[in-house]
Image 1: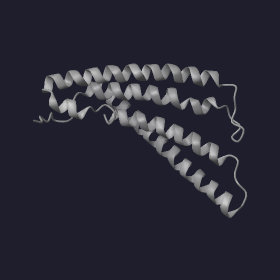
Image 2 (image 1 turned 120 degrees about the horizontal axis):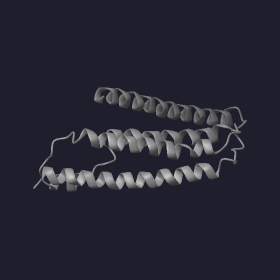
Image 3 (image 1 turned 135 degrees about the vertical axis):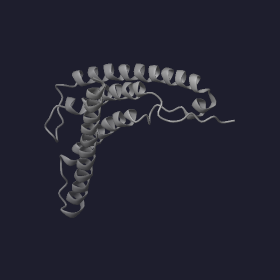
Length: 163
């Protein structure tokens, strides 16, 4: 069972990584096209600026989930290093509780916002703006999974005693 969860975890976050990279590359390409169309072709594109913004929002929200998965967002190094290993693990539990609480709040707000704007559309892309806002609850839900998965794995780094 645990092996199956590990495979599922790796597959999910590999997919998230590919999606974040695709959004980032598409934002770069659309931004490059916008500059080219505006200054070389003298005919600015209506869609590229809106797509660049939407793609960056999605890339950031997915990237935050990836950062949580490797523990990059859960670090309180100074205090962690000052504590004994057992107390440091309790600090990690406390930080996780705060992070999960914040992510649950952000998930709730993100779902509310996405639902409220479902009838608005972006003029230049012609799609509902809720597709852009959906990055917030999607990235937040993935961040919740990532933070809890990182916590379940336990401490990865050796405790360094300073002082």
